[in-house]
Length: 301
Ligand SMILES: [Zn+2]
Image (cartoon, rainbow, N blue to C red; front, side, top):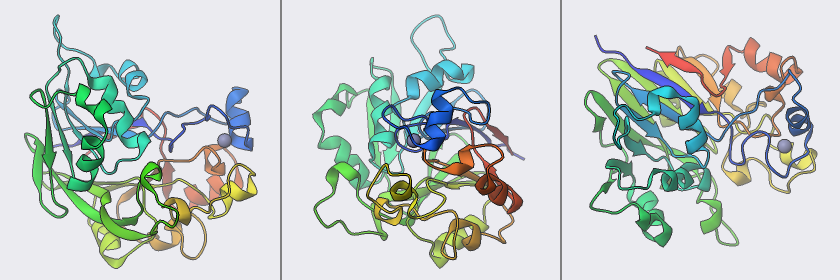
């Protein structure tokens, strides 16, 4: 029987927690070092079957800090090398890809992503710092299983979402399934982990995919759809940003109330009151059987 290790390198949504320009109630607690909140870096997960070679799920702008905080990701030899052998991208948002720039210096690894996500990298010349003869860009269709590392099978699955913000037009299509925002299933033998940091809505197929997993790390961006508006820090509802709320009749708690998997909320926005220990929202989520990811959380299957 194999095993599957996962380390949450970062549990926050884009901007991190606290966010550099934010004075919302949760960020204010974080700026004040209040013990009820723990700062979090931007979302990324490291996966391994042997604790030696690691595959990253997304490369956040905080990746350098995340490597510093996690010795398993630090060089093993006295020369230039890295235990990071591959990066799997679930989208092309800045908080999913900007960390690739930390991985320059001609260190070989592979990037696995859909054609649309690789297209966003190809279109931006700054990513050519990852020389193509050194860093392979491997296009992977949704629904096709591939090995990101020996013994580590990976498959992208469709998730309702939207274009990255910087590629949006005036009237972006919302909650559509495209290959620019996907979830990812990791399989090591019979063990399954599903990572889905951005979901605008639940579908029967998505629900079934999550129900079949042993561990689900799911979009915990916002507690309520109007959270950013009520906090006075934004004009957009959650679904407009490609994220379904945790609470409410169409929320994540209701949609996934009876799946057997260990359930963990990740990609948590800094406005989300579940970040505050003891808050009613935190209590509701925990009473429903969910965990709230924090940086350094280790999952072992
Ligand atoms: Zn904030």
